[in-house]
Length: 441
Ligand code: SF4
Ligand code: SF4
Image 1 (cartoon, rainbow, N blue to C red):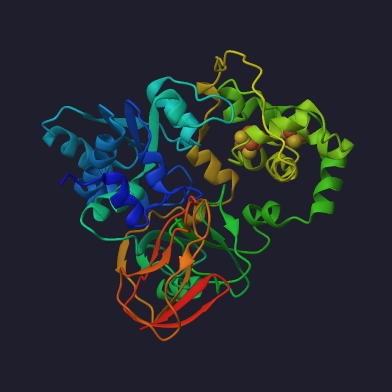
Image 2: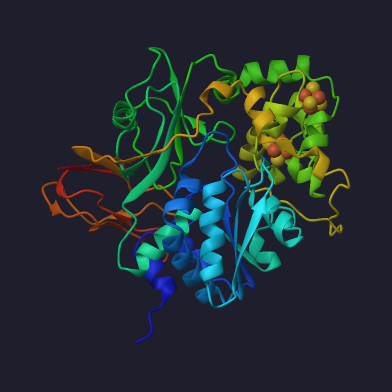
């Protein structure tokens, strides 16, 4: 009997590893002409994707071919930056070995945000994804490197149980490491030699789009691409933790309406109706029912405006995120005006070189390109039942149950969109509480 690839991906709990965690079986059900592998690794300091491209390229390509087969795509394009020379060589060699002629390697320039799905689709295919749209609407699926690695493992009957991530910043031994999903951040940091400073914050993800963790007792999830340890007063941290009233005051008094944020906004440069400088006034004047306010729904929260463009160090990204949350709560949606989207003719010259971004972020001393340190297995894991877009998984184990790595512990609720969750170590279920399953070795 033919294997249903979509079912296999669903059964093994594969979710988008590079972003918010959209269950991969949802993408795999689409029909497209091209699958793009997003190996841009565009967030500064994160290195796990180039590592996987370099060391696991054949596995990743098996995952790519599986997604191409179920979406009907005739072309699979592996996209990565030229600066990751070993990874580029590994990919080019693999493409040369492929007899089908369906695979290509696309070498990207080193700019931010090359890995934004919409930017990537435009760079590689010259197609503009509609405002508030997704690549499927222009015949493409974009899949992250580790997601495809996990698809290949799923085809071998292995569920998603581990995560490759970068540990960087103020840490003794910066590294790329493989850990079971549910490993506590504190233990990962300890494995990497511990922080080099006593007072610090940890960013889950990259410096541009990652979020500051409330503490280190948080578990690694299927979407944790990096853990960056930074001083609490570092400018990467400041805007992410700003008090809403302070944000409003600063927006009111400091923004000079120079419109530099709009000039460099990657979505505006693609032709989308997003003008962050105008949105700054929306918050100040409380004009949330205006047409301009709705533009916040088009913001990808890439952080270019906040971390690079603004000379006054204010945060249009944070303003947009807050407006967006309010509009989404009120179920206000974006209505396209039907305009033809045309990219800005200066788009290429306004791309932000990653090296300059790293300097501007004051991260140059942490830009050390760490190597792979192997696998770390803790004594216990705390696995969230909700670590993906959609409904949290329904727990199917109880305290006292024995489980092996890969056993199902969370099922997709009947009729809901979601992802299955599996045990990531062998052991005994110690507790099921607040949507978290604790397993001890
Ligand atoms: S770049 Fe900064 S100061 Fe200029 S309009 Fe945008 S938010 Fe205001
Ligand atoms: S975060 Fe700023 S630069 Fe990025 S898409 Fe939103 S408005 Fe544009």
